[in-house]
Length: 388
Image 1 (cartoon, helix red, strand yellow):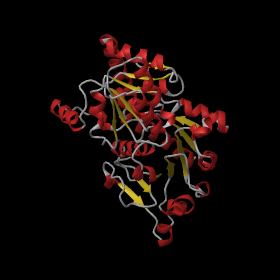
Image 2 (tube, rainbow, N blue to C red):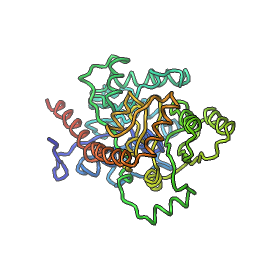
Image 3 (cartoon, rainbow, N blue to C red):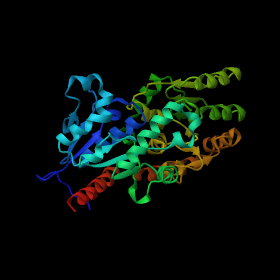
Image 4 (cartoon, rainbow, N blue to C red):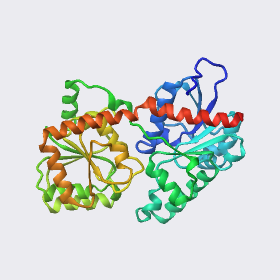
């Protein structure tokens, strides 16, 4: 049972490593902001402290005034703020009498286990271990050092999917009892309703065709956009593809070369789309296609379901957890199978309606109040451990 402390004087305090929430525009940043916004909305009586190495040009959160923002108070740590975040932030965590500290993205500050403060770390994925070829050697070493330390010293670990939980057990030897699976949500704006006039405004703003397929995600090797474009070419699918995402070289160059070499002229690239515009772009799409080889969860899948857009995605891994029973699952390496799935979804009206209905119902499992409740249950179970 959740204890709502909003009218009580004995409320407790939770500290968060807020660097990602304040400065990452996608992925870990979206997860962090969504969670913080959901918690303060459902449980406003808790004292929330956001620890950040700097505040200039940061994202502003919903109900921002209800958070206590903590940054380095000494000049040396302002100059070397990464050092403060990694090694000296724990002094401020202790000074502000934080009851629970939550590392939102794979890491905890050194010495947190010596402060007497209970700690949690969220682990999103172990892709750098499962697919080391996708990462530079030095980056893998840094990621491994941080995540191994965090899993060792934390009191509890949150995995954002069962796939990530299983990877923690298999690759890092973490005890299952230490791990709690709590799924991610998506930005609440995707659940808003939009007028037909706004739909037309967005369509005109980005020069969108009347009918199109949609891909949302970074354009990098792991996200596998090239297989989708190959499928459109091989299957002679004439529906335009709208691609929303940041370009990463040299992979984007490889995609561009394939488009040029095969004379494909119906691929539309968009970048830097705001959250206020993206929901309509999802909703007007015939189908959302997400063929990533591996993810920790896959927030764009949930965004599509909430937007009532049919989903085609990768079979296996965490993808069924995010996309649910109404989506179509295929081999991401097989352009022929991908093309057949796209033709099936775009030509069968009854199938589309069923996918939309089942997907929308499944997406209700990831509403903000459910996720906030699950986290608060975990936090309060840790408070009981402190008292005992």
